[in-house]
Length: 178
Image (cartoon, rainbow, N blue to C red; front, side, top):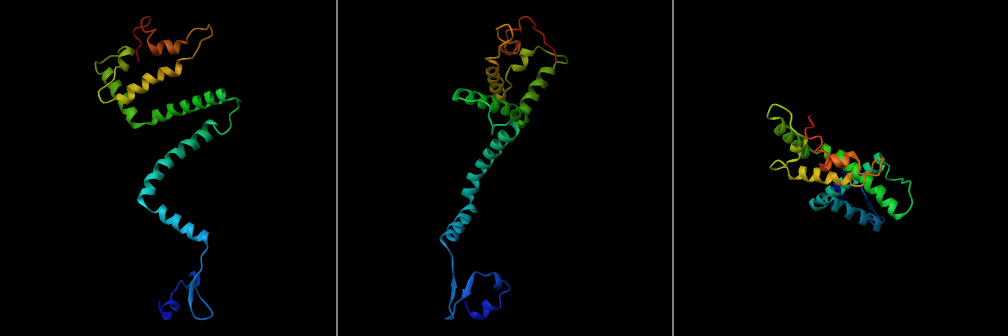
């Protein structure tokens, strides 16, 4: 580059290129500057953006678990207790996330609309018949019974919630209306 071009540059004061005593122009950089420049170039590639999109979703989930559910400080000791508490907290996080899912809400609303289509209320067991195209919602509801698997009532028997969800009480109260 000609010296006249370089001297007339409006960004000359912030330019990293310097003129030496013998009239040459040099650019000095350290190994850290080189690594940083390479990392910044990599961050601008579409492959990095694609990989980082998954990571950003995971980071928001981890942040929510730590800040909203207190996963950053567990008040138990021992591997089994820690695993159980983490499992319960993550399960607790999945319920509102599933409720916020547009696909699940659409499936549930279509099931409710199909149930109420006849003009009156129908029995609760008809809500759990999967609607075509709602495979995820029916899997979610069937997996929900696993949450109540170890829910014990005061008398030592399975809780009423679990029996209701698995259908044991439906024979007694066959017409739960909405």
